[in-house]
Figure 1: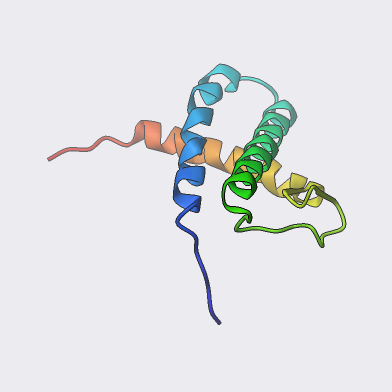
Figure 2: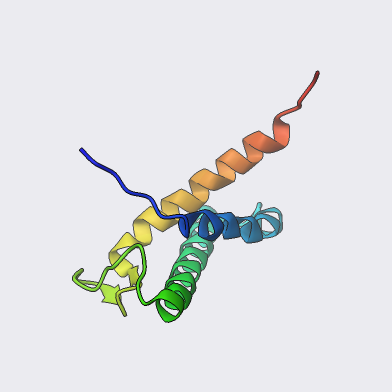
Length: 104
């Protein structure tokens, strides 16, 4: 089993910090609305970072052009449940991190 990673992914994943203020704003909303918001935001971020990378370097680390439900090879609509669930999971991690206290 081999694996690859791309240095481009570090700043892309780092952009998730932009979602942090949203969490506090929607914390009390129903789960299905919050999950849908996270799903849409993930799709938007994935699409535009992929578009920017493709324009800048001619390729992207992920290429969904052969997938059945892709949009311009940049996102896969069949990943919607994954992004929905991931957003709700990240909420749980965020809540846990809010409770962590670091002591010396």
